[in-house]
Amino acid sequence: MAYSDKVIDHYENPRNVGKLDDTSKFVGTGMVGAPACGDVMRLQIQVDSDGVIEDAKFKTYGCGSAIASSSLLTEWVKGKNINDAEQIKNTEIAQELALPPVKIHCSVLAEDAIKAAVRDVRDKQGI
Amino acid sequence: MTLPIYLDYASTTPVDPVVADKMMDCLTTSGKFGNPASRSHVFGWEAESAVEDARADVANIMGADPREIVWTSGATEANNLAIKGCAHFNVRRGKHIVTSRIEHKAVLDTCRQLEREGFELTYLDPDANGLIQPEMVSEALRGDTTVVSIMHVNNELGTRNDIASIGKVCRDRKIFFHVDAAQSAGKTPIDVEEMNVDMMSFSAHKLYGPKGIGALYVRRKPRVRIEAQIHGGGHERGMRSGTLPTHQIVGMGEAFRLGREMLESETDRITRLRHRLWAGVSDMEEVYLNGSAQQSVPGIINISFAFVEGESLIMALRDLAVSSGSACTSASLEPSYVLRALGLNDEMAHSSIRFSIGRYTTKEQIDDTIAKVRRAVEKLRELSPLWDMFKDGIDLNQVEWSAH
Image 1 (spheres, one colour):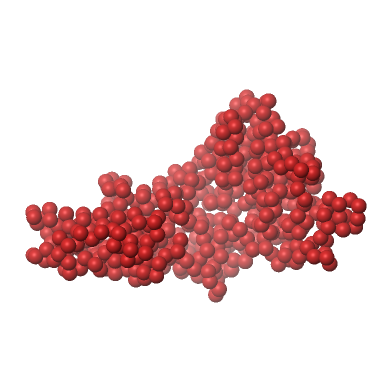
Image 2 (image 1 turned 90 degrees about the horizontal axis):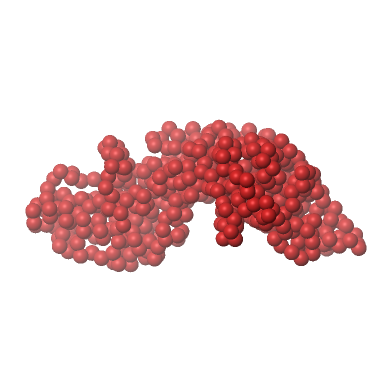
């Protein structure tokens, strides 16, 4: 499997790896995928009172493309309002990382992860 | 150290330079380039004599008579010839065949083809150690069973079946017994008499010989008859036509002669390297050996690194030439059918690596491998939400995953 330079870069130097305090009502967690399918992504966002994402962290069990997709996503969502963050499309991720067709599902998973994280933070804040 | 480090000897091996020299001597005008089937001149006689010397060297590794060796293009063809040839020849006796789920695709796909032709197949499940027990074979036999095909050494696990006991079960019931020995020649002793084997498949390139050549042992006493699968010229006693590739055959003969000679010393050396590798990685948490540690060849070691995904592990280990437990080039990640047959779940199958050690593996390479594996596993676990959850004491089997 030939990976693009961007995938390799994110894989070698993943950005924003880690965990946020899930008990905080300003933290939203999106956990998507399943071990049996070969990938699980956990994306967490921390928002301020205006709904702007101050911090984002991820951990991913999966192939290089899945790790790169989630790493890239954390970079993209930081500083964005959650309303804008949930508009990020998997095709943008796939294009940026030059994912081959068999790896498109990794970008789909990343899109699902940010949507789930935004949903979680909204639920917690009751908005 | 030259990178990447080759640890995929179960996949194929480099040709031993001694073997390559002998092969080179059978190609050009200054060498034995003649057609071994040419009876009317010295070029043919010389080539024929080289082929017959090689036949004796191959026969020697298994205690057979040279006349029981049929040259083929490799173990795949030998498996096809043995199973289809024997099943077809004995079709009036019955149409039931017994094999196992962990055979190589060359056996499994051959059996699938026979199923399409109307044969009935029984696929035995291995035990948790990856072994096919003689009782399993015995229980599967029926009145209309004609062929049993069980591999000697499994290519993914390195586990070694008790061929002699299975052979006895088959011989007592007068059922033909075929063994795929592609991974065992030169790795563990073989004796077709003691083992009651009727047909046995071999490949040269797994034992430092060239690719494109193999052999099928076909027993003469009691005689095993098979139907040819390739016709045209009646070479190899009518069982496999086609001009004999002298250089390939000479290469296989020399490779097998060396393999037999070095069996003991190489087994000792490779066993030490295997123990070194296992000792170097097994003190990490959640690392598992797949398949029996006792009943196996030392050169193949299959390890699962839990909570690490296989493809990213291979990516992290790109300085190591190893095989993964999943076929990740396909759109759907397919876990190894061998590991699944052992009862491993998909995650564990995906997170396993087969290291295979061979003639040119050094202690330094093993030490370097250990360091690289540890680094990769630690890095990927640091990245893995599953590892986090495991560390938090969460049972991953109880989690409801959003399948996609």
